[in-house]
Length: 166
Image 1: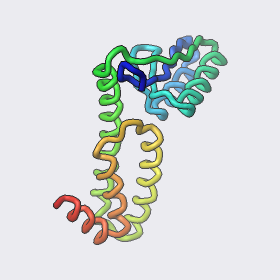
Image 2 (image 1 turned 120 degrees about the horizontal axis):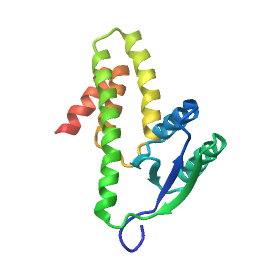
Image 3 (image 1 turned 90 degrees about the vertical axis):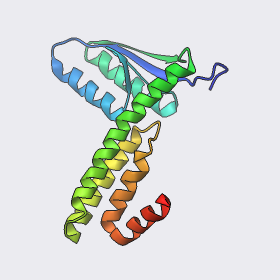
């Protein structure tokens, strides 16, 4: 955080030719996997740290290799309210993903043990993928983890959840 109360963000400004569309689609998918905040067409942001900066630099290199233009910028939102809105939108996107995992775990909870274990393995992998792009963890994160854990040990996770709700 700097004096104005806002943190540093790394921005990727990029432009790709429309044709061929394959590089554009590939880059868009990579940006989604990173969990970027879309500020405008061709401008995305992530909270700045060594990892996020390096990842966006790699994508910038890919954009240039595909015949486009790209630049990496470090910036601070002008107000803390602006930064909070950005963080809230990123957290809301992850909250929806965690809610989907919780829903899938609930659907599998009535299944046989082998199905529950298989579903738990798949959902744990999904939780790891979501966690890599979860820069502002919402409350749904814990709920999703508990729901997946409950698939393996239904009595234990359910008991933990009831105790925490008291």
